[in-house]
Image (cartoon, rainbow, N blue to C red; front, side, top):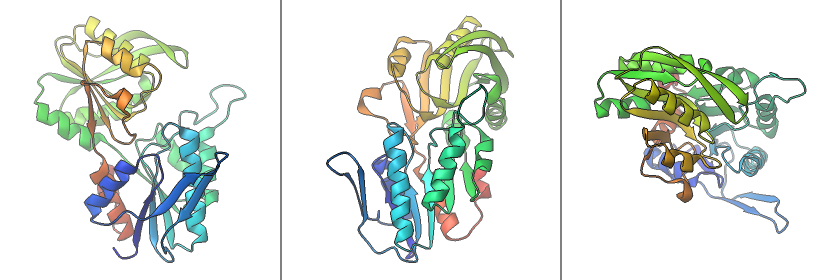
Length: 312
């Protein structure tokens, strides 16, 4: 591990420390601050010439600040003659605009992919992209991990009977099927119509949920409106206990307030791909760590070993 160096910006230093603890290495030193007018100031405080460098930085809120920190840190490391730079982005922001579904809209996922490559990243390590095809936006290798194993291990320990895995929309069927297979559970889909980017209308439920313990699975929760509507629809359809397993807990706006008011949601399980801020903490929000998953992936990439077993 002498040639391995792990850096972090200000987005999620706790996750970086957890990864370093798993790998039994020290977190490398870098100055990540601001000039007086707000510009980002980066200085690498140790020799990284010829090293295999990993930068831990989810592009979580504030996304613009964290993305710029990542880009500038990659540039600094590239100019310091590193052997390889891997951007570890547990939560890949700007991914929701991944195609032109309306006239005159950008494809921000492709733009960010270009920025990372131009800055000097040689490889990307990420988890539960909003759409799997975003991997194809990069001209460099992308290792796309999944949190399904972490969630399934937790759910199995709860020993729930008559479980049904619920996809909150048609686009999440593939993810829900993966959970259902591992949990030996049935599958249901909520058919909904989106009236605006932040408001949806639940139409009906495909599948049997009456008298079953429902687990809603999704890749991210932002304002929480879609999740709460799904919970209400499941309760009306006769579901018993209702839980949600969501990879990325953005929890923006009044998301926590909505969760607090929704007594039918027994527990929201998220990962620490995004740091859970103090004002977003709630007794019914459970956080599972992905430090071991990312740490194992980093170790395998550094040792030029297969990472494919972690994709399952």
